[in-house]
Length: 156
Image (cartoon, rainbow, N blue to C red; front, side, top):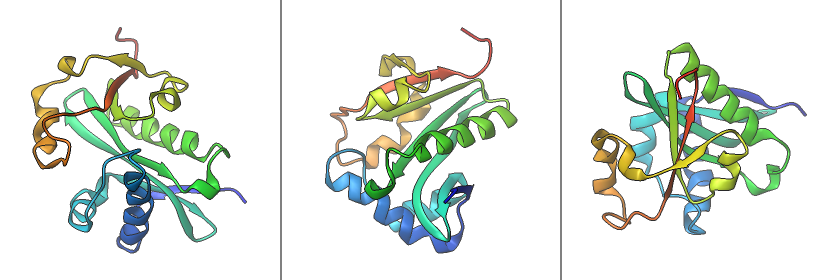
C-alpha cells in the first residue's frame, strides 16, 4: 500500500479532527475544533491510504519568507512507516514552490523534526505575528511547545 499525499477536501474535516485530537488528548499536540479546521482547510494536506485518511499536516504562510508547519499527525497504527516524513516533504515542496525560505514548527516532539533538518530556536526569535493564534490556546500564556526552524534555501 503506497500512500497518496493530497490536499485536504471537505470530506476530510472529521478525519483530521479525530487524528489531531487523539494526540491532543494525550498531551502531544494542541486540539483543533471543527471551526478551526474548516477555517484552515486550504492549508491542510492528508495522507490517503486507499481512501482512508491516516494522517494530516498543514503549512501556514506567516510572512513573505516564513511558513509554519502545523498539526502534523499520523494515526498510531500507521506510524513508523515513513508516512510522516512523506507528508513533511510535501509541505517542504509546497513551501519551496511559494519561495518560502524558512519554515518553523512549535512542537512537543522535537526529535521527529530534528531528524528532518530542523534546529531548535528561541521562541522570541519568531515574529509577533506568530502569536495571534496563541490567544485562543488553552495553554496561553504558558506555552510549553518547543520552537524549531528549518532554512529552506541558502539563507543561514
